[in-house]
Length: 61
Length: 371
Image 1 (cartoon, each protein chain N blue to C red):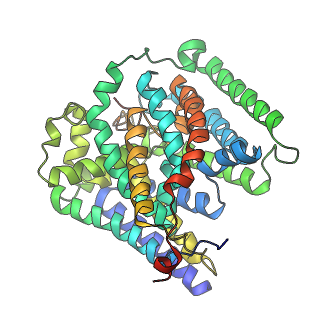
Image 2: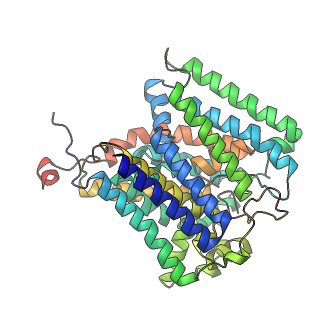
Image 3: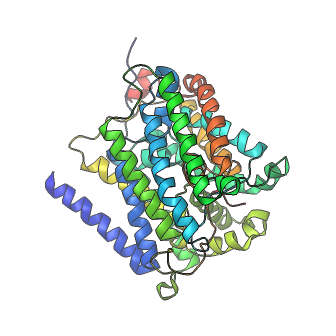
């Protein structure tokens, strides 16, 4: 029985592809949706801010 | 090696700094938190799918009990926080229904096929695992498709939202949750092989760090750690760019989701931690003196199977109100009954998925792999 051969793509290359995917989504999305306004950004911490969370979570319906 | 690690650390600071400048301090903190998750999960080899497989195949409960420890520690911090600031910190409470049970079962099976769960797919992709990267593409598509059918699945039959807090109050709910986790850990320990019952130092440290990061997620974001929402949002944005009228669908016309769809992903909590998670895993992989070997080459139908399994992962996680993170980890640690039901169904699904795995992961023929 022969051992399975490894993929030709080394891990650093695949890792860079993953970063490219994520980076591409961010840059493309910023071009589509525009830059957020940091002066209207929420306070650094939700706790103590007096504001409700967005509700955008996996458990949301 | 020291210089390379210094550069990697500097790149992390640059990412956090750039996100802070573009989207504000909370976004920067969440990106940093995501990087922390990635560093711990990849650096300390703390996962979800692998320990479940080990419990099923080798009666090794150490990894699974480490997960329960992390959930318990998060609950111990999270319950008082939620009780103290109910308008600022929300729980991951969702109703139990056929969609949750079926979705969790299928998710459990699919995560054993690709050897990666919600967080695992991101970590695997960032750490250079080609199976994880291919699965991630499917995951993004599947979690978006799941949003289109969520109404159908919840309409099949859903109980009201039941939580530990609704059954026993904030304090009683915490004790109920901790007692449930302790009972499950004891059951696993009894079933485990000798010497494989309790987590060792590495896993215990990882559990404490993951719990600390999850508690910080509550404090910073006002909501629990999640994965699948952000991936579904990415899929929705891609579909919208392709011409689909996503904003008109039931899920994305909800004002909460419509706002996320219209704004940058850098304003979305789970997107930010997901981005950081991939980056953190990459940092660990590149910081190692010798990266792990590449994954085994697969035949074309093996890669197609991985992409389909990834799609199934995303779809099933969406209809089950979360994956191993959003439903199992965050659901249980914030008191939701759906987290417990999710775990039971997904664990059964994992046992089934282990039988499917060799049928999907078809290795490449030696000649093709060597090409």
